[in-house]
Length: 92
Image 1 (tube, rainbow, N blue to C red):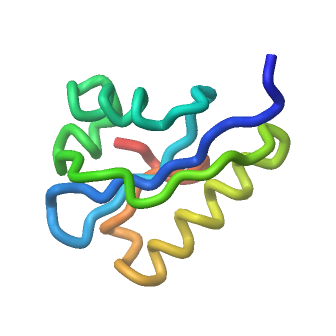
Image 2: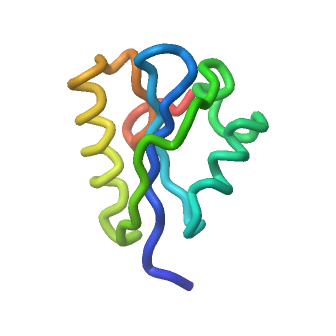
């Protein structure tokens, strides 16, 4: 089992709306395809999926902190009501 996972940021079709997530898959495009097919979060089902804006590999240990840091970065730019994801925020 790998000790790494992939963090990704989806730019939604709804303007200025984003989703931050993680996957154990190496290639985030597989998870992105699931989001587009409706097997992602309620947030991406509601706001659509335009593209993967960012993705990078991170250690599983500490991944929650990194995901929350990325969520906070986007929330500061676009507002917390425009970004979902992170372990301490609702993914709905």
